[in-house]
Length: 243
Image (tube, rainbow, N blue to C red; front, side, top):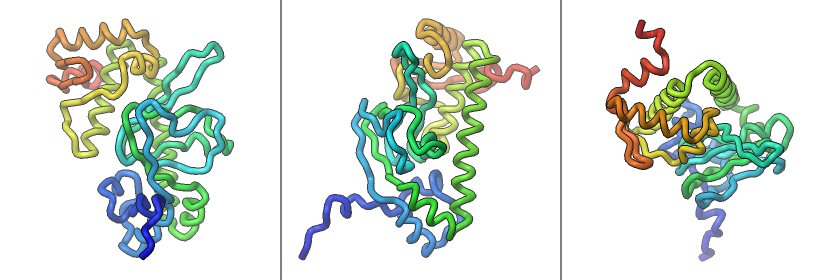
């Protein structure tokens, strides 16, 4: 009896994945899900600090994050890193490569991670057969546009405390959608990386964390954050709502 190859052994079945409702369309029946399994080629493990893909690399696949956290970033002309996003389990990463067939940023694992590799050609072929999948991919891309618009608002119009409050609220909301706590976060990113994403210096991020802690809004122990008063955090982020 032939032993399965490594590729066959780690073949992904979307129909049995507990994250399928987060990264794949809702409404597929069992037959549709079996065909959807064909979209996914393999799983790929990425060690903490390693690249999933690099700026300038040829685009061939999208990646559904199964476990772990990633950051996407670009480098300025003088070598400084600018973080453009943080991605977690259940989210799809790699959309930046669709427009030019090359990736425009680096994707780096913030902890040991595993992704489902979805060759884009497979997605395009199946999308022609299943309009539901095509609509889902449009929603994923639209969500990315909305996220980028939100970041532009953060960088353009908000004070440091508002930016950090918005960041924490968004992060805990996304984690809660995955069945995790609404009030407790273990930050996979450093404060320096948060500052890069929010357009703030490291010292400013640290001061904002300290201010929230002193006011009893959050409890901070290294990378552990517990939100004690979510309403106060929401008021900082969107004060006009509470006028």
